Length: 136
Image (tube, rainbow, N blue to C red; front, side, top):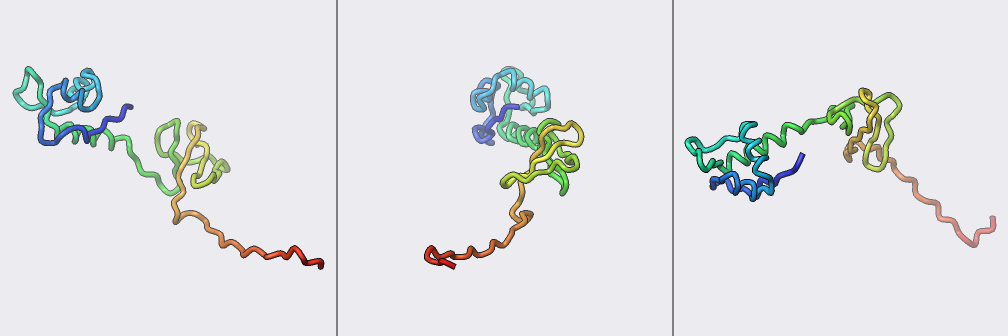
């Protein structure tokens, strides 16, 4: 899925299909597809079709939020299933600041960042100073 920058669209302006495609660096076909998917046009504008900038920003915000999800305590983001899944037993490994595991549904790779509050901090022991001249 391509990423479009809604900051290139002004809330206070109306755009034709060509102007909107140029502003978002998308094709005109993409803009027509968005209209079919529910992007609101200015009522009564047939030729040229006008689209309010505020409607474009709202449409892109809703479209982006559809794919977001929150992970539960024991869930990982499965990179194959594209959703929250539980890990197979015994497959969880900590690598740096990430927990990695295998998906219980598709056996694909999964990952989850470890938050600072969840890390198990160990108090390091103070190193013992050894003297080079000690012959004991």
